[in-house]
Length: 154
Ligand code: HEM
Image 1: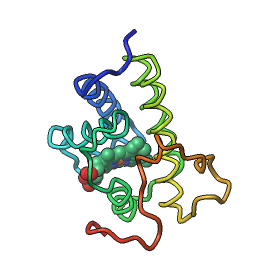
Image 2: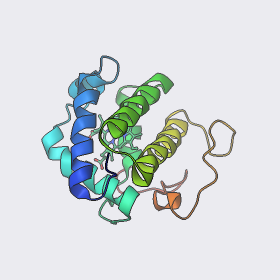
Image 3: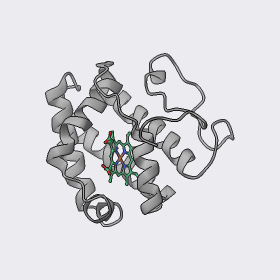
Image 4: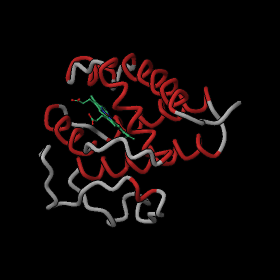
């Protein structure tokens, strides 16, 4: 099996993943009913995001954390939701790809999900809930603002 190598691969993975996520009985309704997310419209944003996370493409300049905080205000995102999201993501990666980049796609998703989860649960980094403090220069590419940092999306 090949590793993730370019945007076309990311697109294939993202389409696979959201196909499963939209159909999932637990988290699917968050996409289809709460956010009424138009996947076709969101696809380029998702690809920008993952290209930036995995290949430092620098294309994604929005704030994914704030999008999920806003979502959480409408429909609380629970630990179970994050676990489901991650297991679907891992499964989608493993079905299509294997290698160091595929591994990084899973690891980064875990880190980002952990960061989002802590924030929606109102926790701060470093309280021991998740091993997210060991940021390397690589993982630090995704750097959500800390409490107090405000962006135009808030
Ligand atoms: C409980 C787990 C999650 C749920 C239910 C969820 C659901 C959603 C929904 C409904 C949207 C569309 C929001 C809108 O446009 O109003 C969205 C956007 C997005 N999600 Fe998630 N998400 C979850 C976790 C994650 C994780 C862990 C990541 C990254 C690793 C992620 C990455 C993104 C990105 C990049 C966007 C686009 C944000 C933008 O518009 O700039 N999500 N998510």
